[in-house]
Amino acid sequence: MLRSVWWALAVATLAFTAWNGLSLTMFDVSMACSKIGEGGSYHCDDRAIDVLGVWPLVAVGLLLATPPAVAAIAMRQWVSWLAVATLVVLLIAGVVFVTHDSYLNLLVLALPMAVIGSVSATFQRTSLGGGGRKVS
Image 1 (tube, rainbow, N blue to C red):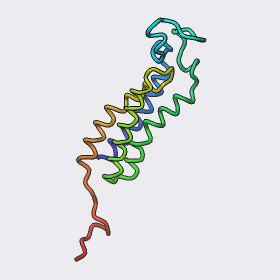
Image 2: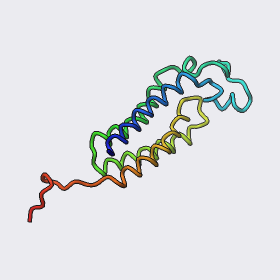
Image 3: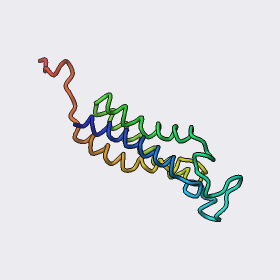
Image 4: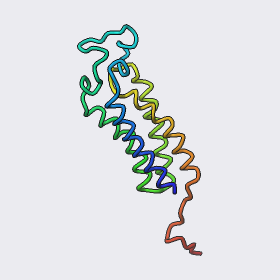
């Protein structure tokens, strides 16, 4: 059950990132556009993927999808908590770099992911080593 939660987070993140890549304009990702209504070498109504390119979007999607995917593969409680910590660090990076003209503002998606991940990690049971037998 918990493995499916982690996989759902990874897949939903990739879908959300792809959807944003197709729908965001520079007005959505540029502070210059949202403050003064004009950008440097682009118009604020240009599609963000046309101005910034696809590879930064792919990188942000992979940054967000990798921690839950690793937690789903490993299924260890300490790996799950490490994934939650990584998502919190990504959230902080998204808040710090919100003023840059980039897709890094999508990193705020790490907040609900970290909340769901922490609930999942809390209810994850640790397994006994050695096949589950206790040797005395």
